Image 1 (cartoon, rainbow, N blue to C red):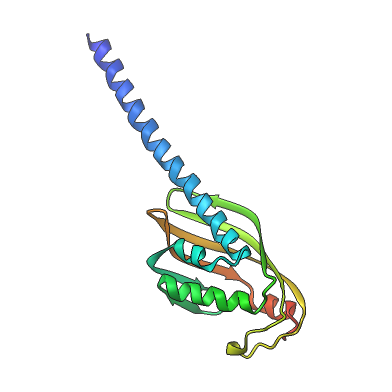
Image 2 (cartoon, rainbow, N blue to C red; image 1 turned 90 degrees about the vertical axis):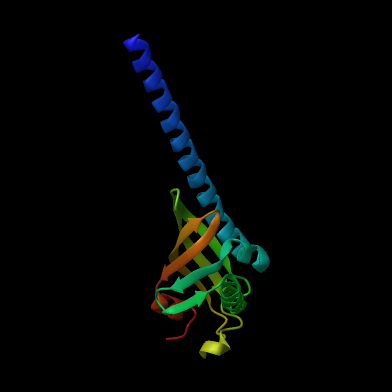
Length: 163
């Protein structure tokens, strides 16, 4: 009888841990797909879909410039203004690492500075650049609640011919 109870207890525990592990794995896969969608929406300039990836009160921080945006509409407006400076912008995914709470995407941003960013006094130079960076996303309930971008400002300026 004791053996049966031990086996039953072991069986119940194993089911519990398999279910917990499976749920964590599902979140990890989902968070990886959210990171892929983040890049895909930028590449297709689908800003409404980009906005839908974020929670209502999400934050977006650019570490190199110190810019900080709160709320998914403010984040979308920032992204639109950024990509408008290089309308042919494309982001290449180098790698994605995810767990049940976050995703990190390493990317390369390529484009031609054909418009520039007048709001930041950065002129159009018609130079093509390539910039490496990473985005770290904190995710809850299948929405990005916090994003931090890391890239080198000097590399961007040099790449677009503004020094």
